Picture: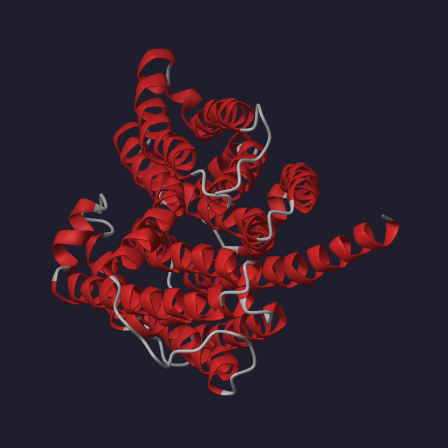
Length: 440
């Protein structure tokens, strides 16, 4: 028994640690962009990048539709020893990502003015948002493929290579931000180009796993199967919907802040969003690291391992989120100073950060439970949870509660919405396991 638990702990560490590190590095792209833009271009440019962020997040959510759907199917098939079936899921998911990224790139390049308006950009921010979106969209195809290959590389037994890919990309992004924003003076366009180029170069690193045929997944012998493609979409739908939580919250908050509190509050929220995206990366990384372990244990019908990984992940996310909130509460001033915020923006951000950051605790648990549900074929429960969390609770609460109780409640609304979603998550989890895990 002790040997078995030790083996599970080793696997847990092998997958979670590099995935959390790589996710933090990935979201560091956004934070570094914000720091360089705030210091090298100005506070309004910082607000403009924040207004553009929902497009970036929506693109990632759509990539997750094919990527998470594919890796979920592949993980279960690998757990059953079906390597050919897992490879077919891999190939179908890559085709899906390629189609999605091509459509998004076209929309971003040719429809930037329309997108900027939809994202809530007023006269202060419109031109800056258009500049950022256009150059970011040019790189969406390689960026989408990078994200997909990282997911499959992790599931195929090489989480450390994924971490190497993301860390190398992050270092290149930091250098690119400095070069393009300061010496070359390219403004928000430079930030977008630096992100696109660095993530595209990360594609070359993670592709080594498949070019050198290190794992079980292969691209040869592809046979298009419509039922498999639909299965991938079905398995990926819960995570895609879940990924919409941040962009929907960001868009709703931006609209509410512009109409109720003005441009200064939008700029303050931009800093809050950067902190949130980096913090949430820890919990998303934990859940992504557990996904292969959930899927493979489910494929082997190993209920004891499933239970162990679920409990361990819940404790990791809970303690991590409480620690992050504590650090933000204590270090709000130095965090704000990193972005070189104007005095008025600094004061609003310092007040808003702790009011917003407590939402990280329910976010951490919601992310974990959702990953557990969709990885164990409880698609309906996961879709219900993520639909309520990403599309209903956040939007209705952000607009309704301040209208009823006053603008002072606006910064607390994200946490209130996530807490409601957490209660629903526990109800769905308990009901779906009242007789234990059902293996299909």
